[in-house]
Amino acid sequence: MWNRLWHAFDGLARDTLWTGVHDVMGTVAAVVSFLLLQYTYSEDTAVYGAFVGLYGVVAPLGSLTFAGPGLALIQQRIRFNEDLNEIFRSFVSVALILGVATSGLAVYFGWLFIDLSMVEIILLVVSELFFNSMIFVCSMLVQAAVDYPAMIKVRMAVSVLKTAAVIGLYVAGVFTIRNLAIAYVALYGAYSLWLMFRLLPAVGYTVRFGRPSRRASRSSAVFAVPLAASSLQLDGDKVALNAYNFDAQAGLYGAAYRVVQLGSLPLRVIGQAAFHRFLADDADRDNYQLRRSGALTGFMLAVGIVTAGAIYLMLPLVEDYFLAGRYREATEIVPWLLLFLPLIALSGTPMNGLLGLGRATERAVVFTSAAVVAVVLYVTLIPGRGWQGAVMATLGSEAYLAVASWIVMVYYQRQADRLRSSQVRGVMAR
Image (cartoon, rainbow, N blue to C red; front, top):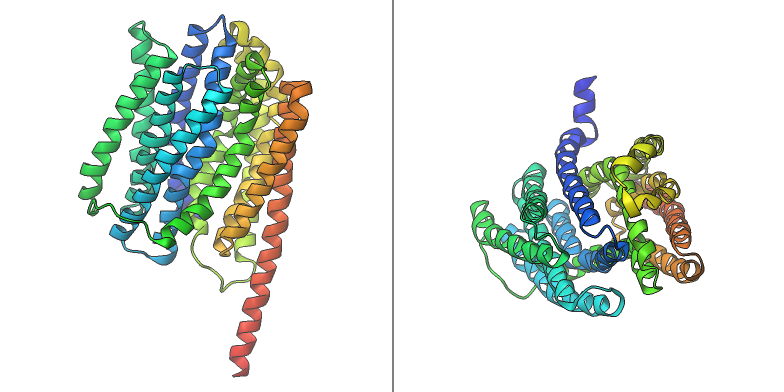
């Protein structure tokens, strides 16, 4: 039984274990930073709301900058077996260009909507959209050259650096958002340079920059657009709350969202570990991607329901030990956001199954349409309802994504099966 579980789904258990350790470390870093920011700004939840709001701006642009090129290069390696040095030259160049462009956009939108100083906005944006983006792309290059656990080890260091920065500044008595941003820039910058010029050459890359190929630019866009749309759908509510002057509510909503993010940890772990298993071309078997998507979704749905129930039962402990002081009111928001967890389980896997069917463009259309639905709901519901409107909009857009993803997945799986059957009949007729 243990061997069957360990080797099921092409060894998913091993990669899930590595991803779980990484995400636990990331969660610890997020919890520590939240708690210390909460204590530091305990008398002004609006400051934490502005901090969360800025990351709501950064997240969609970050998907354009590093998640898109990073995931696209893995597809180029796994599905098309492209040369490693060609991958480096093209995709690192794409990430650098996008890092500069999106940093400018994020600073502008931060200046428009977020109540932080311009210095704080610039430093946080540069740390995330330039240096952290390069770390992510470098980690994916390590996966392409070595394996999945090696990539996870590279990304674990980011959580270590983040936790060290937060605790170090707090112990030194100089913990502020500005000093935290300075520490992020310094630490992420030094680590990204070490990865680029020391680690990557050690695993077989030649550090050479140049004009990205059209194929790299196109595949990066195919991945980046849906990821950015998904981030906008998930994080646009915090930006909208700040934009409509619900700054204090944005702080409470962000705190509640942190609690729910803890519950989504198992789902994120499984989804990240399973992602590259859908990239191979398996067009020779009927219903292959649909069956794989269904099996994994059923398991993830059970995990999501159990996790949501566990967090609901532990809300008194969460209120006493995690959401203290002025943030205690956030416990009223958590039960509503918990409905988000089963919806995440339903929508993620079929979207990856579309990649296995070669339907990356159609996948991007579904994600983009969900983002449009989310934005319309944010603009419609948040002005008159505050955080209640944000919850309604988030759940509504995620429900739309879950339904649309399965409809599109079933449609294109059947289309692929019909095409395969007609090709087989044609070969037999000849």
